[in-house]
Figure 1 (cartoon, helix red, strand yellow):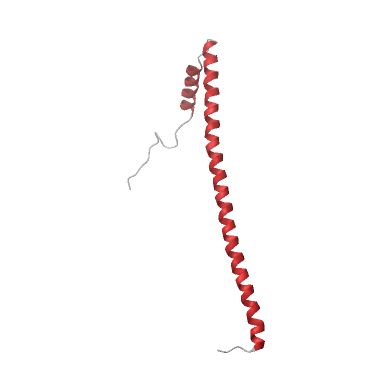
Figure 2 (tube, helix red, strand yellow; figure 1 turned 180 degrees about the horizontal axis):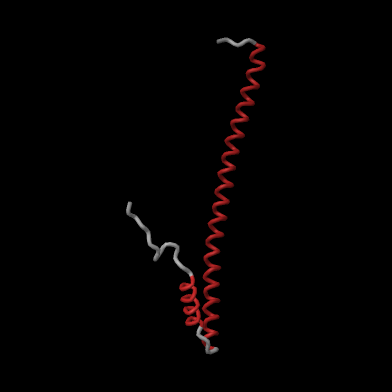
Length: 103
């Protein structure tokens, strides 16, 4: 297949444009992967720090319980009573109900 001079004037610039577009797409894909990786790393770091914050809150809660016990209060017994009262008030959706499976 032979190309004439006029056809070459059109074909050669088109191949350069196609090459540039392919290169841009490849670079865009690489950038997207890098951004996704960075976002994943930030999310992992945020989750790791949130666990530390929870441990800190547990330490504060333990300190409050110690202060309450020093004041003569017993929050654990009160907490258990409150929990038992809530358990009595809340009924399970299907426990204790009769289902007829015959038929």
